[in-house]
Length: 305
Ligand code: NAD
Image (cartoon, rainbow, N blue to C red; front, side, top):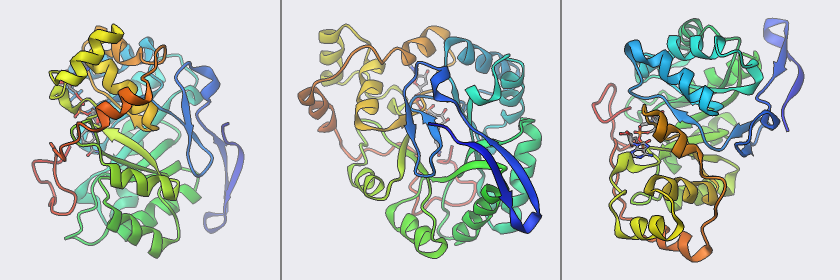
């Protein structure tokens, strides 16, 4: 399913074409968001893909078959992501683009300006998913910031809106005060940090769970359970972990700048884990967070990415 048609924006008296990601153009399974848009279940994470190599790496990802790119204002590669997509020759509706609003841009007006700046750098007609990167509860502006995202959605400049690194309490407040449920929450999630409670809350509220650092940045490749399953199934540890994400119902956005690994990470749709194997991985959870804690992470804190 994909959204087609026109969307009117009463406050700005304009009408926009709404053409969104077309899942039938790719072999990567897609998930339907609560607003009806579809999103590839596996995408390419573009953190630390910067500088001169960035455009080439994104181009390679698209050549290998990735159809979803996760960037952010913070990653300083929106220009390269946009250029790689524009020059790929792929129709715009065959690539799903996510970007994120950085911590220094919280607040309604700042968020609107930050979006304009991201759009200018991307050079694309629209963003498919726009996320608030971190909630920054101490700053206490995430509800106003989300209202800006709602305006952008009404204006047809972004198709879906969501958040990243929001805990249950942050989500409850956004939902309670704006009346809108974020379509996606992008959170740290890998076998040693399985986020079972937050995933259950997402499921109960129709929020898609998107896993960042889905491979735990490699920290779990040497786990004996992962190695055992990889050997048994003739797959790599990365493939076992990504397959676990797919069967849990997560969206995952692994990052690699090595073409063979980028291809390996996409090749997870021709095998299946049994229920027992899924449980074996899920029980590895140690609550081992690698990144920042959303409740305490401050503006521009180092743990943010
Ligand atoms: P990841 O779990 O994707 O791991 C990346 C690391 O694993 C890299 O060092 C890479 O070289 C290695 N790797 C990848 N595939 C491999 C393979 N097949 N074999 C061996 N090694 C392999 O971690 P990440 O990069 O932190 O996260 C992925 C994406 O998530 C980022 O690029 C970014 O888009 C997003 N992200 C979002 C946030 C957020 O706050 N919203 C935070 C961090 C990351």
